[in-house]
Length: 208
Image (cartoon, rainbow, N blue to C red; front, top):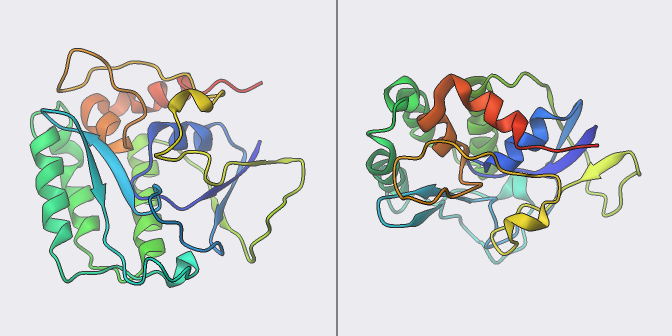
């Protein structure tokens, strides 16, 4: 299965499930930046509720291409994000195994949102045990060939999880709450399940 999908910040489990079941993955690198999407935000599970972590960007309303979207470091968002992640997962079984890698990657002060997203994606794929090559589009095409599964903007904060008909989230241990919360950032799964993350990722995808 060939998949085309946009760049996201510490993507959800459905994103990784899609990639894990793909034979060829293309990251859309020539689209215009879309506000209020997972391109610069992710969701983790804190003690009280789902927490949304958003990377501040410059010129969010400009319609700039994603590759030209720069990160705003006027506020210390990396410190705030890490504090939230540590608070949410500090007591998770595998936090100490992966925390250093994630923290180091977040603190690289990469200027480009696209580059930071890809750096974190590559790291999380490795930690999850998913081996694949990422390809990048050379130009933006609104319509793609029928043999490509176009998932651009399908995994979106404004869309319910049940709209992803191929994604059937498998429940796993979570640090907080009595009810399982599906499709959080890959961080939730990695910190809670460690080496078993890949099994959960694969079992959560149903493709014909």
